[in-house]
Length: 159
Image (cartoon, rainbow, N blue to C red):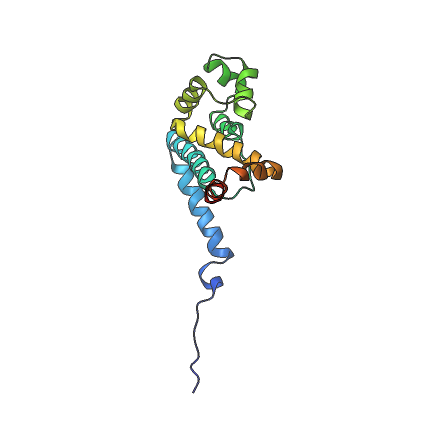
């Protein structure tokens, strides 16, 4: 006696028709939102992308601070030059901070934080993650630091 099993197939739950219906629902809901609500949603989406990037343990991608700032600029429909004016600095100097050519100082860090309504730690964590990304890409750099392993210290103490 074999029992016939009625298993639910993925296509029964999620198919093109249901996907399109969901897209239509999201679009109609989005269109009914106020401009302010849509702006908040877009800013939250950037915030989540920053958090995801910081928490992502893989080292296969490197997103510069500039990339995240460009997302904010797109939402506000302003240029980097306009942001530099807001920050009371030269566009070229701001660009060097955003690309990682210069390390963030407290002044730029707090301006970015205030502009984006994010904690300053997020920007520092992005910067540190990117620095570590660059170091780990260079195999010679990783092996150069292996001599600092505590086991090397213990090995010399035992002898």
